[in-house]
Length: 462
Image 1 (cartoon, one colour):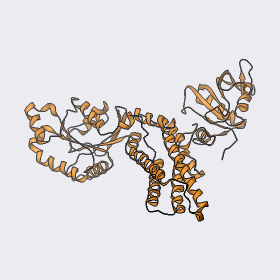
Image 2 (tube, helix red, strand yellow; image 1 turned 135 degrees about the vertical axis):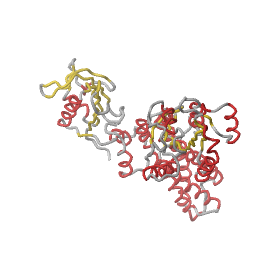
Image 3 (cartoon, one colour; image 1 turned 180 degrees about the vertical axis):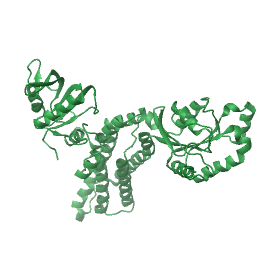
């Protein structure tokens, strides 16, 4: 699969900026770069040491395009494992295009999405899970997702999987050896040790599978639906959380007729807040559609904030409790934060009475920004960050999660085979399938279609 041709792409974001970096990788990358580069000290790039910088100009025949700095990386000591150069030029879009077009005429071709990282994988510089972590690292927008991506890119997850695979492979070899001596009825693999290994592998797989529940929400942001009756301050709360006028606020009930979403990082964890239409009986067709969407968003949310006007509790308390029970019954497994808004309008005794009616209530005034920090702390408490703090491996990739589930299933089949004295040839089949699933994660087993799907999601130039 490894192509020997030289690829080129813009490695920095498209558009004008102070500088831009154009990357070339391939067997002829340094030669091609040298053909368009005129060093201020008359250096020949092909004769320079790896990991060196050189100042000069990019020239097209007798026309100087720009003054640049060129970095030289000789394979295999480069990101891709191939000869690579990076041209740091001025960030004019015109200059970028002129240099890229020149390099295309000199024998390069435009890189496909993720092709530099694909070549790093094919040349053994990264395994597949590390390569996927590169994309996660680029897209990380909070401390937690960045930490997980860095841990995976350094090989934390790969090392765990590789260790399990190696131990299983050793026993698999002994089981396979037994098949060659089937007529002599000998056992090379110690069944007791093998069973202990399977228990250990099962434990690790279950831990990794369980970590996906945390990893997935950290990677994608934790969706939080803000629900309640109209005009209780849902949009005001969203604005207070975001510290900006994101949602329209008015005294007219039913102002929010569609869902409004925005993101906020709290304690290094990303939260996606969804301001929904107020829940009430209405004949307004547009508002009814908004209310229907509200329940759809509650279904999708990881956490639900139920907001009500605490100053109106004496009048509408019974109705509110009915609505609250409805949400609890419909979504019993979702963490629910019950907030009494507009607490600034209540006396101390009224707040005490309200807390006796609803013990789990959080008193807050979105308008006066009172209690907003307490709400943030409560939201953080719903996220199990213990594994993150302890720098444990956390699975965030759906493909990895799927392979781990299948590997666990095969390991449990092998255990059952040992417990029921199943023949070695049938046990060997299940072991091979478990090894196959481990190999899919790290790329020891791969195919063109799998790689195409993974790297198609990368940006051009990475």
